[in-house]
Image 1 (cartoon, rainbow, N blue to C red):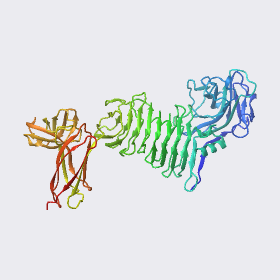
Image 2: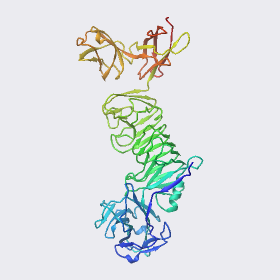
Image 3: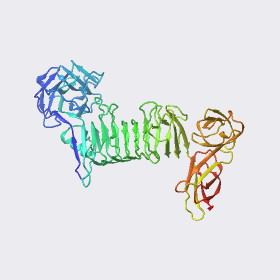
Image 4: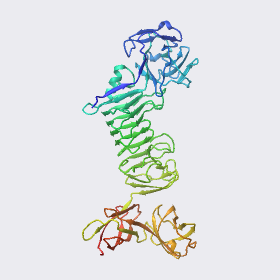
Length: 605
């Protein structure tokens, strides 16, 4: 039980309460004053009047700033005459960081074309000492280790009073949120904003409209040794357009296995493209529950096994790395990162069955996939009720529905319900898509006791011409231990089984597991060195079930059928006591609903 704590890691550089240590550039140093007119933090700020010129000032900290790996400079700058300010590209308002008033970098932050009228803004800057057209301008030769910070303005006309103010320069990354556990109230976004407002730091600002917050930095929920509980409903968090920042500057991080984040109908929106906002569960097992939340124009989203994002929306976001998260009922649309990539990556061994149910994916303008299944994803995948819109109908394209990153083996994707094209691009693995399968299930019991019979041997084949081959004529050739079967339009898949009969060379006959499947051929392994090509009147029939029942007396097979399929077979149990008489099986698999058969066996001892 720990009370909620909001702690900023920003450290003060200079609060601009006086002009001490402040020097001007562009001339007019005597015009510097400290007053209350534009003050944001404390009592005063440093001000200057700039008439139809470009001028400003910097505070000299004497010693060089220590800039950590994620640190940014935060500073408040106000241009009080936006109508006569130049444009942002032309250095209307700049943040200045460097060595002295002759060697510094002007970071273009606003102008009459972008400046909110009457607004005073905190700017976050990642220092670099190189030029960038329309965004950074060098004065002299600033070094990589600055010691001065301030601001400036380029005015286009004469003004009557001070029209630029600079206040509260700091350096850091953002907020650490811990506690709120047990009987203590959990944290909320308003609490972070209230704390930020009390010190005017500018990491998480309260705007004029209630419930809307501006993120400019990092929010860290929990830590390596401290958990956090945080709950909110209806909040709107916008990642500021920080084009002088690192790309991962605006960020929400979740850490510690006991951290709990519970959000309902909250919105996260990126306002810029350089750092549009990231969400990352550093600790996969932390609990993140979101219901009806939206991510719009947002950056990367990295989830974990403890995440449950139900009926959420991801609109024009970067990549969602699921890591086993539950995304049931969520929608993904407008993904525009790069061609031949995917908005959702599933790269864990867990079958997404029950975790991606009832989602929808709508392709944007780029040729992209819907889901990427990585090299760690399972080889048997089930997807329920997912709608795919706009993806290519053919395999092997940059906008085929699925992107399979495995380079070998067979990946079987079973689709239940849903709609849209079911195509794939593969890095080398064989891909089998089973669309809305029908299941044949046998339930084997003792007719006298009703007990389930485990270990019963079941064998079922096609029993008429249908969607599966039945006594189709084939030819067989052999190379080494590989028998190659020419079988026109067989409709089978890798790892399916067939019953081969009628070959004069008995090594070719029997139940065979097929591989290297193509439209009109497949292979299987043969023993010995039988004559090639095989002779005789050779037939191939699909084997649907060939195995033993489990502890519940069950054995089943699921696959797609284009029409109903008649079957025949048998169940026997004669290898160990109790022994049973062989029970025949006949029936028809409905292509839509499948077939369940109760097999009752009579003891034979």
